[in-house]
Amino acid sequence: MASRSFLFVLAASAALFGASQPFVLPQEPGVDLNAGWDHTLTVSGIFDYNANTIRNELPMAIYRGGYLERELRQRSLDALSSKHNAAGYALGGRLTWTGPACWERLPGWRPRIDIAHHEQGGLRFTADQYELTFFGNAPFENEQAILSPSAFTQVRYQTVGFGTQHTRSGSFLRLDVVRGQSYQAVDVRWASLFTGEDGRVLRSALLGDYYASDTAGSGLDRTNGVGMAIAGRWNTDLRVGKRSVAFSAWLEDFGFVGWNGNSVRIHKDTLIRFTGFDVENVFELDHVLLGEDELLDTFGSRYRTGAFTKLLPFQVGIQAVLPLGERWKVGLTVDHRHLPGYVPQAMLLASRRVGMRTQLGTTLSYGGFGGIRWGFGVKHRFGQHVLLSASTPQIPAFVLGSVGGLGLWLGVSVAF
Image (cartoon, rainbow, N blue to C red; front, side):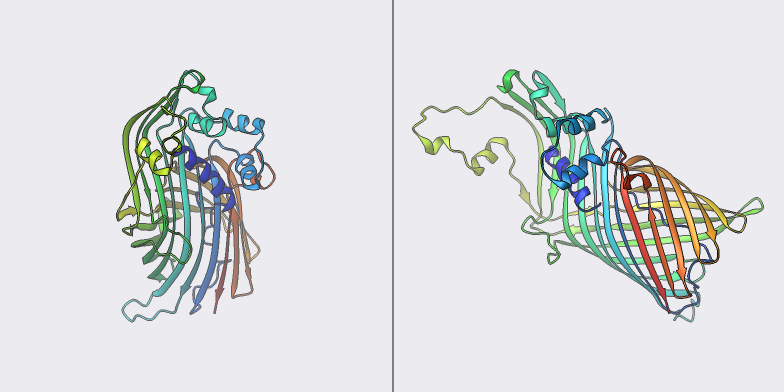
């Protein structure tokens, strides 16, 4: 099961362009839209795939289809870590509206509405798990393959949020209603597979859990769960000596989804020893041909149905930005996301205002699902009403298959 999940997340990551979020340039009053406009509409989209040991050439080859050359599979195996291998993705889109201030007691605060689509996944796996998936169990003859600890989570959901945003600072607080579309998760705390000589004996130990939303369908027309979440961002200026530092802290998608009663789960704590099937009479075909029910009974893999509640893949982060003169800014961002394989990510950024309408920036990040990444971003204002933003966390990914990670963030804001 864990091996199938590994294949699935790699294919999904490439197909969906799947997860640390590509960076967004810091606030720049000379470039950003004037906060005095009554209405602002922002449309943004993100795709981001990242991995710490799997290079882009493998998921792209899976996405293209066809035969995977042994050299490619072996090259990927040689790059794996013996302790920590991770991959993940994020795909989403968001529409945000902020309106005019309309509360007499809170003149500096404006209403805000967000509508968003989210798809996220994370995977933590072992080197033996990869080798078993792409080379079979022949390399483990008379050996034990260690398949844990490993975990996989994939979730798709939509949110509609209502909140308020501060006009000057951009700080906001929002309450989201969550529509759960699909969910599946595997948590393998212990698993191993021993292959005897010539594959005559298989011994497996397994301790883990599997959860999935209603398997009857997970299309855009299906609602398989409902929930609530909160999101917010606090922006302020702090004095450090004689300098002013722009400090931000944020929380996104901190909430839950209650998945409906058609959801499924499997809990396994078992030892399996397989030496083949005994056939007493080859002419009694009814007893020789095995169906799905017989195999499920043999391996004890039947699932239970029932509702369950799970946390969303929330994100928490902080950022500090220091101005250097009138045009330059440097900053540090640290974030974490609630997904298997994700470790706290640190990102250094530097930006420069070019003229009165453009801001350019570059980043160097480490952590999340991957290793070191070098990114680039740009913001440009067209007149007084339109702002275009774009960034990528991994520039080399667009020209080199030997690096890990690929992502892009695009945003358009219109004020009137």
